[in-house]
Length: 522
Figure (cartoon, helix red, strand yellow):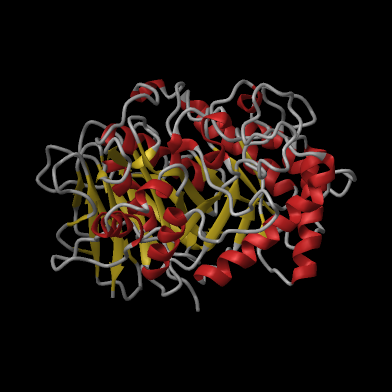
């Protein structure tokens, strides 16, 4: 069907009784951008404990993360994540303190046992959340690893413990590693009825932190090692009739994807190396089960503000050159995010939430991300969780609190559903002059627009400024009669709070430092 032109006009506050638009956003369906796949977070280092807490507490967490239901007042009960990331454990839990990973929270069980058998009752807490996600409508699942099983690693551990930057996997166990992954895909589906649609066998293999010390599960790898392993995994999947897609390579920094950063050529230029046929040793573009897609993490690239755009432009240029799609698959707040005080100390407020909303906007609009995934669903006293846990000393119970960060992600995930198409936006001023990149003022208004597969329009408007802004909507020639807004702000209770519906061209107000998602009503 022929698309209609959607106009979003924003008006600055004036002293006039009838404010007029200073900026007009024209959303152009004839210039569609990327198709959105899903929004997600991971179960890492939390759900293996919280997934064994009293059921009512598990249910509350699951509702917050996965529910697409509304309460009796029309307020969303949760943020409707459409994909769930499952951390396939390496066996550091079974090793205890000998794992050299200090916190029990950061250790994981392994389905594989020392005698080569499998125990599908392992990772029970995490598997409980697979079930809870599926019960709430999640139908896409991704399995990811931080390390191969400890039985296969060169040092017998799931952490790299100061080794060099090579893969912590014995040469004679590459095929065993591939078989393990195939067995996990088949075993979890048989045990729990959960199919993993995607497998990510490496996590930040280019991250120099991987060989600094024994802090957490992880292993570096060169591009040649990744290519060898992925080819063997693909071969095993084909033999076993597994159609799970293998995603690569969860880069630790966007700069490692299109150049080199804090490492050498053996780990940099990943897009070119894996998807240019001239890269014979590492080319994976014709490998069964490997999509023309690369995954990366947006850590360390969010400041200063010019870098927020520039790094993503460079990434997008390289992706386009080699015709590769992109997922942003992990981020949280790090020490260089100085604008909000770095990563230390959990933040329930809009300070962190707005900062992350700005990252989401730039990843989608400038890098063309088809999927956006947060790191941990639940964390402790650090800015790495959507939710904050407080655990009893025996780990058998505790409490979990929500945050504005959770609901800000929901301004995207709850309303932009799988298959939605992002649409181009042209910004003009009062005189009709085009404003370059007028849809993105990183210190003011940022707007992106989407159309879901059911024809419904969705617009997310971020106001980063300390002043409220006025704006109006207009849909020329369409059947849209009104817009339902959902607002998140620092006010208590304003967590995807439904606000008064707007008619086309009716002036609306977006408060300072808030986010509103507008959904079309026919």
